[in-house]
Amino acid sequence: MSTFHNSRHLGRRLPLLGFCFLLASPPLSAQTARDWIKDACYNELQQRQQNRLWASQIQRRNAGRIYLEKEIETVDGPIRRLLSVDGHEPSASERRQDDERLRTLMHNPKAQLAMKKNREGDEKKADDLVRAIPDAFLFEDQGYLEGVEKIAFRPNPAYNPATFEEKALNALRGVILIDREEKRLVQLSGTLTQQVDFGDGAIAQLKKGGTIEVKQIRLSPGIWKTSFFSLNINGRIALFKPISKQRDETLSDFRPLAPDTSIAQALEQLTLK
Image (cartoon, rainbow, N blue to C red):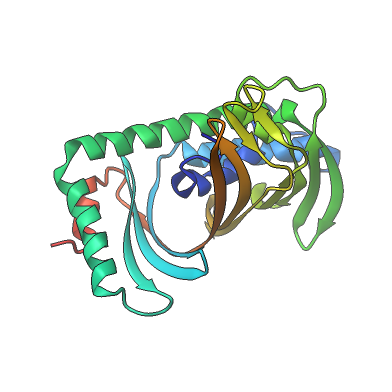
């Protein structure tokens, strides 16, 4: 599967891919582009380690339609409930389908376990990619404006990726905006600069020109969340199966949840009867 497998869950974690660990921070005047990235990485990971959970609303554009969903994060992964389609109440068929999906999750321990394993896999992939960033990219500071530092990044030709995910990461070129005060990611925009093959293209392939964009907002001091995620990639896996991922999500109305929120508690909050 491609780097962007399970993009719905992973997509909101993709801001992490722009950062790495920081051991010591130089004075502001001595900051280099790589220093800014390191600082932002450290702060991002510090928040992530707190294991905070959130409820939010997500507007998702897919195949020309607009879906509004409520999402509740749990210790085993995020759960969504459909609120509207193209600005209207879901049809009877759409509501039945959504209710059945949630009921299946409620009463199927195997489905719950699979969701938990997917979440754990996503977390590990994100961690691995975070650690790869310092070597995968070359950075150039392009100055600042209104409290935001602009940093261009491009593939590091000396980097030797160990996985398909790292290989796809290393093919990105784009721009990162960092909040100068809190040293946090404001925006990441990247484009695949070349076709990415895994197993000489027999296992997976991503076409040149695919794009990704992530934006974050500050909810409170030290707390930032993804507010926008866009992904547009094409390719194939297993020789012939085509990949076409076009996602566009806007997140809002964030509300903090208890850190031990369970699937059962989330389903109750989603008013599933």
